[in-house]
Amino acid sequence: MLRERLQAALKEAGEKGDGRAAATLRLVLAALDERDRSAREEGGREAVDDEAIVAMLREMIEQRRAEIARCEACARLEEAEREAEEIAVLERFLPPQMSEEEIARAVEATIDELDAHSLKDTGKVIAALKSRFDGHMDLGRAKRMVCERLDCGCRQASAERS
Image (cartoon, rainbow, N blue to C red):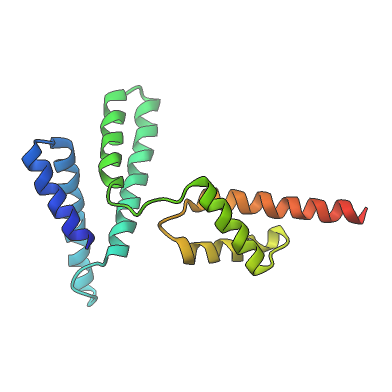
């Protein structure tokens, strides 16, 4: 379970003297405890599941990426570097991401399976990809591929009609 991996990593970081990793993991576990508390107050389950933890980690990474952009814009490079180190710690706990080639194959297969032909079909293709590969696929990259493929299909079809 992801929660146990986070706790074990915190213990390991403390033993190795890795202050950045330990501080980042303490922050993650504190946020996780807060989400557990909120879930209990709402009458939900006792503890959030791995899927919710992954979503929380992704959220934390996006916050840090935004902070890196702000720091770099203000020439606070040491702070940007610290944020990047924290992202590296957080990414260790995310599921492995699909490669560019794997995404391309999945996009092609889904377009063929859904018999998508125009940009109007983009939403249903992305929805199918998200349901199958959420957390493993960069959906922004996949959407660009879908749009490129479906747009090309539209151009070819209209060129053939002319």
